[in-house]
Image 1 (cartoon, rainbow, N blue to C red):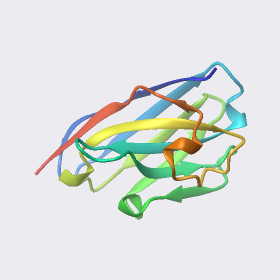
Image 2 (image 1 turned 135 degrees about the vertical axis):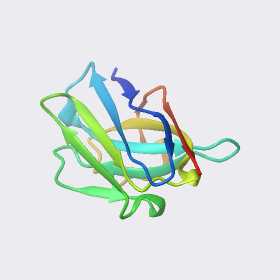
Image 3 (image 1 turned 45 degrees about the vertical axis):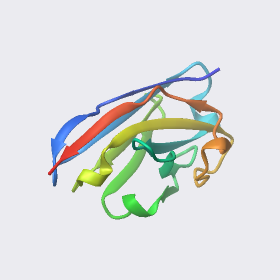
Image 4 (image 1 turned 60 degrees about the horizontal axis):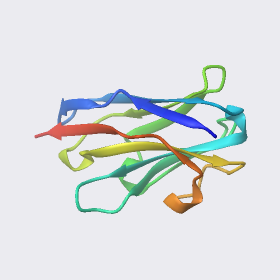
Length: 125
């Protein structure tokens, strides 16, 4: 089992920034590629981006490209999502997920093995 706990969500005005963190415990962190997803009310869970096991490769969904950055600190068992230039349409619950021995580019929720509880991000105009 892997336990994932997100933090760093909150309310911000459009154009602002937030950094989300996801702390992992329970298994060897480097066995897992990590992904970030988001889900807005009434919408499906959507891929934000992913990062490979050692952090050498990152992948982004279209809404995140050029504005969001994923990184990981394997010494701290933590993955981050830096979000800049936030827009109201970025409002959603953000989830981190772990994919055993994955590459980080998997963009479907069913490809991930473990999930955090989510953290709310609200962007006001």
